[in-house]
Image 1: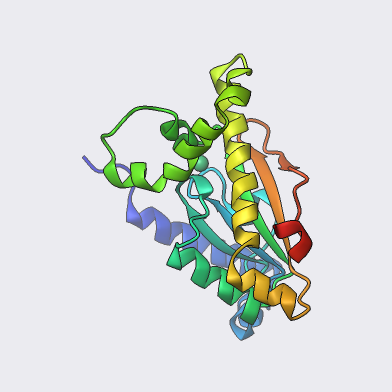
Image 2: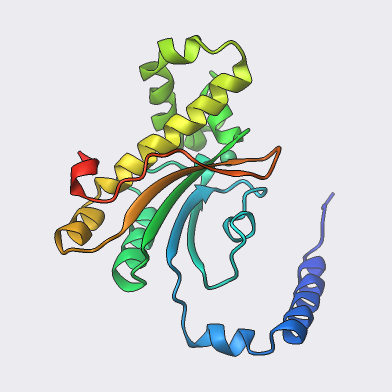
Length: 206
Ligand code: CO
């Protein structure tokens, strides 16, 4: 039994183009010329956290990389390629690592469930965070609180890892002004929060 229909996508596309043509006729020709986003977004694949929508940005304004639980693996070629392109070609000023409360990937990393082999491997850095922060997390009474704190710790680690990449270090060494930020999005209230862990240069990255 198949749920949803691909036709729905084409119908939606026709309606969306019609809306844009009406409100901003220059939109597609303008975007086809170039993209000049100021932001590179590393977020969760969760369908409820679309970067453009939650940050109120139009197409062309944010370059996006998403994966399960917004993990920054230092050897993830897909993420690193996108980061390199964002920083060196698009010359974005801000790299955003955005996690979210109620993240299913973070929750999965807290369980002893070996049924999804690849996902387990992917989530290993979060499992490590659980171990390394065992006492601090244990002081939180509710399981939901612990998972949400873990999601924040995952973002803090992601920000540090991005800052430690040769791509970002090279940019700073050459005088580039890129900043790395850690944000959290709340599924329940739609609010974006700043974790206050922005790194703006080599000193903050060590
Ligand atoms: Co998620």
